[in-house]
Image 1 (cartoon, rainbow, N blue to C red):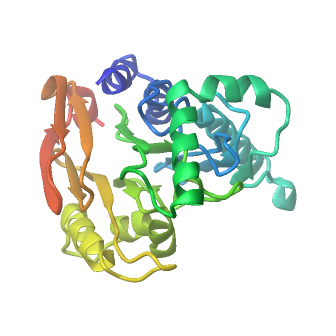
Image 2: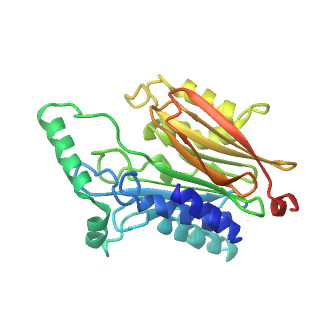
Length: 307
């Protein structure tokens, strides 16, 4: 809720959607119970390696970082990459332009960052998980934590999406997940913003976010999201045959406002949203149920309606 409130406050201060998205996601990266930034799941080697990215719908700009160990706030690094790429495009740097996604190969500050990113709870959980898999061959408990995602729409009707995750527990070091890939766990254009979370390998191979955003004509993003989740559920993908995922979508309507919608096949899902036009306080949809979907219409504010 604090994240949604900060994002709303930022937008009311007339910052851009991308700046508000970064600010809101930083709050989530700071919260130790969320699998993003501090408190993230640990790799097999016992380190935190985070993926984060941000995408802006107005110009398609994207920046992502993968498997970084040295960033307290991975989304800040992703946003810096986006800005570097955008500036290089303006300068027509050609083949010398920076890559959209960069690895976490920086070695400076790793020790300090790891001390911050790990918590006593995650260190103990890593010990228990690794011991159970090594000696008994099974997980001691279900659940891996929650990936964090944000969608913001500013007064100019620009959409920005951002996401951050520590990935699955005990994954191999250097794993690249869908959060770091454009169209995997998030996508934005001028009218649609999508953020996904769940089984990373299936989301990545299906390009789930971009597939939802570019769904068949006549389908709303909500209907197409539910269809895609149900289609993927049960498919065998890299030996994984159950997809647990959640999707949040925003569809911008030029006339009256925008539609916020969500769908899930996962067992748990929490969504907080706010709008200065209709929801001055935070509204929360929490654990809304497996194979569920929902949505609400948010009218434009006066500033947005005048655009």
